[in-house]
Length: 175
Image (cartoon, rainbow, N blue to C red; front, side, top):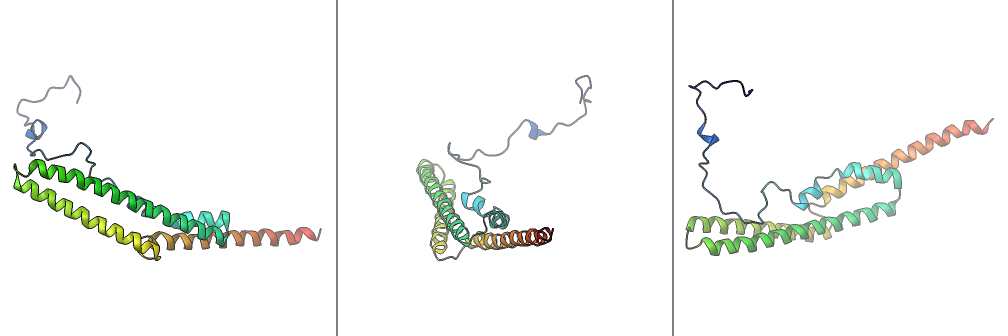
């Protein structure tokens, strides 16, 4: 709308434009939004098949494959540790909030305690994944299997290209 345009007098303006009817919630100064992805999910969301293909094509060594898989597992365990540490810090903050609200609102206290229980459950799942990763099981294998497949495909592509180049050089020798 241009500044020179006039709003008709019978236009109804939404109350939401001026009024916030939402009750204020308890927020910590360090609280992050719920949609922030965890380090583990960011780790697992990578395209490991493409990474494996690139490494297989460029490096084409079984020793490199083993080392890359070990590095992936170490990075996964680090992401698990960081998410566990973040959850433990969040629990500490929430426990402080429980103390602050317990005499004011039983409902808020119960909600905070439910969230603490949820975080404790998540910590347990992450610790289980830490153990499973050492046994070549669990979530990490969702990254390792596609990486190995991509690596193998990359090595095959490299070898096919090498064969084609060498086959073409057979004709050059007869000159």
